[in-house]
Image 1 (cartoon, rainbow, N blue to C red):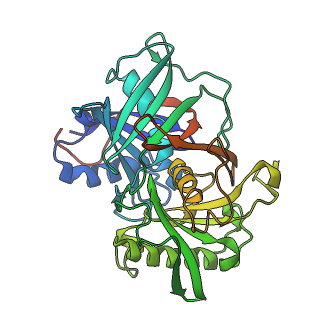
Image 2: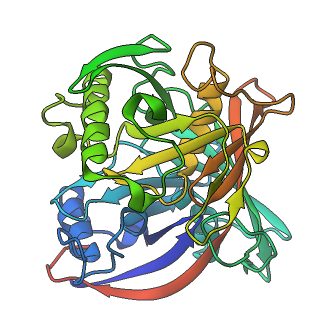
Length: 372
């Protein structure tokens, strides 16, 4: 078979191809070949597939009705490499998660309840719970609204994503090495890092320790700095047990994610909007698949919130959530608010605001033949 139903959604500051699992190849061993085929990888332009030639637009969500008690749908995330025959499914993508509820409602996997439908999502990558609050009208997801999130030019209906018990999403530990700070040897000398695993594992690095201001935009990172950051990330990947540092770029390209932090300071985004230091608690620059993220991953916001609340981490030495659990994160596209707290059963959660929009639904034609 070479025709497969799919939907393209802009989810938060990412864009992805969404599949109902029943429309995926029957043999999961074929999923990697299939998704590379769909996205047009490996090819940095992804000219022969649906990928958008950027890590933010080379993402896939696979969704099915859940058989797990207390959950509505199971959701699997895949990060499709642009340049290698590689699908990374070790971690989740928080932005793509914001499209799961709308997709599930519009595809009849969850009953639509107006005006707001709560969708309980089990993320198979991390084994974690996400609750999505979705605006509904006439039995379908309603994308219209006046909420604007940094990194997206247009407004939409607000959707709340709550990530429950995000600690230890991939490694099983909030602090994978058992330490709030690890000191490592690099090609430029000794550097302190903090590896924290919540929603996704991140390795935090102080901007000043790698010769950065912390306010750089994506095009301002030299290849020399990117290579240094990848060297540090690879060492962190080995400390997490994901891969040997020499093989981390190939075998564990998506986790942990490199995250450069600095104290609040004035900066401008790419269009020239000025963000002042008193509008934020932390300046953050995150990497995605070895390239600078042009906004901030939601899983990055979740992890940073818990890192800020964990004594001794590099993040906590700069910022901590206020009395309401609010943390203001200054990223390349603007300032994101993340809220941390505890649920009724004392599970820690982090909540963020997102918007999403269905862009296309139809058929993708593959080059290869796959049995469904």
